[in-house]
Image 1 (tube, rainbow, N blue to C red):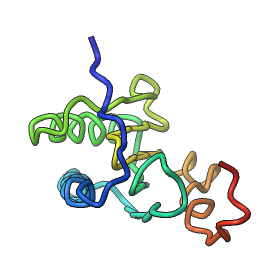
Image 2: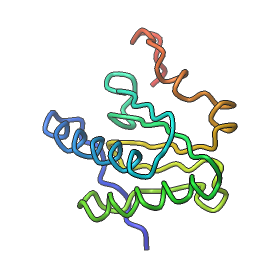
Image 3: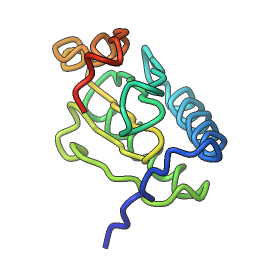
Image 4: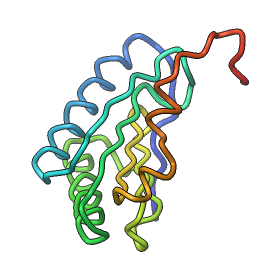
Amino acid sequence: MKKAPAPRKGKAADTGKSSEMLALVLESLEEDKAEDVVSIDLTGKTPIADHMVVASGRSQRHVGAVADHLLRRLKEAGFGNAQVEGMKQGDWVLIDGGDVVVHVFRPEVRDFYKLEKMWSADIPADQLAV
């Protein structure tokens, strides 16, 4: 049975946990030779997470291995069981750790969706849909 990540509380105390998780994610992606890693600060843009990380793998097998290793490292570090989607296909794996959301793509799929471009845009607060 999968355990859902803890609900977000939006308190300043969560910032430390979020930063620790982000550091672990970036370290794991580097160790597994993920390519073109981009970290996006979502603070003030959405309540879904504090950070989004987008990375590429060279093939379906590489994408799956990077995601699998990251899931294992998050669990071993005490961040619980992150929610994951797309692992079987290996084109785009989404890992939702609660405070940090990670997308690992094959390069062609990443180029098609351009998530980092969309989320990096500065949108005035009065134009955000909530």
